[in-house]
Length: 104
Image 1 (cartoon, rainbow, N blue to C red):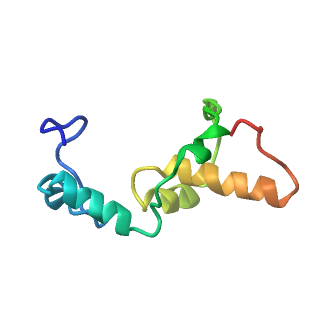
Image 2: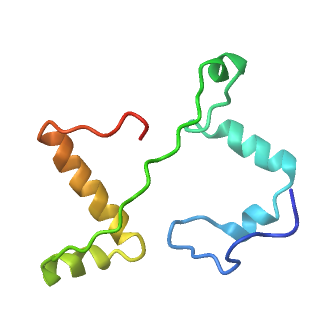
Image 3: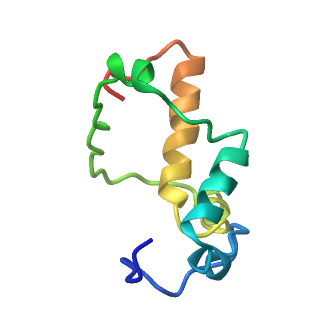
């Protein structure tokens, strides 16, 4: 594992990840932990035969008027409130029979 880090070094523990413990694990320990994780099953060559690279659709910058109470409610959860608002609007769109572009 590389010794240098990229991005922010002051990591938050809000998500429950013990970053210091992970930094101190050996490659063997990391591999054993990954194999033991039921949500992280290894893939083989067959899996990648039909894989394709899909880029997310670019977001559009818009100006929108929102109720301050609703906006503050989304912001209470912290960073990522715009992404959460987008997810809620996408769920509403799908519930009403709309669909997303095939590339997203």
